[in-house]
Picture 1 (cartoon, rainbow, N blue to C red):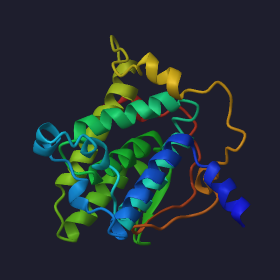
Picture 2: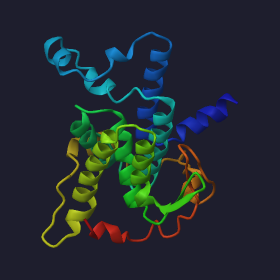
Picture 3: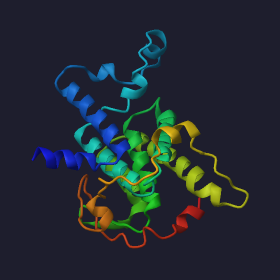
Picture 4: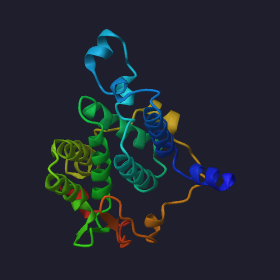
Length: 239
């Protein structure tokens, strides 16, 4: 039993494994009342005047159960999908999104991951509560509409979508335009630290990446129709 759990844990891609482990440990510490959320949130005054620099990082480590499940799912699918073999680029995307959203809400980071994944997997069909069928690029907007129906603010959703689109445009669209070039080149030091030349022998993709099962967290499920997701994405030539 212990060996199977360890093996499953080690099959999670490196960045997703490290980040979600930090999130679980931080959330557990809050639940056990070892620390409080007030010690984690972004506060520029405390950072600059009291040198509580950890808030720059812990701001992105505390999630509720729903937010965490969403974060883990799309973080892992991105790392195993369009970022497979490009660990340094994946870390750089984390840094890009984190810097732009440091002064905002950490939940927007999850929406950013969802947005980038959805634009890079335009052929996957999704289902919302068994009532609405749509393709993956509409997922962030469906989630935003759901938040609106629940009476929640959509500012967080809009922020995550906005930052996700900036990254998507600079990374996937603009370099392919006439006269365009790659503006988000991953720094060499990050490549040296995170890129590995060989394939991970423990790698095992999520079942949905194999077209195997459906998922229904937050009322949305992947129907497993991912034909063509490895083909050239026509949306990458569009803004």
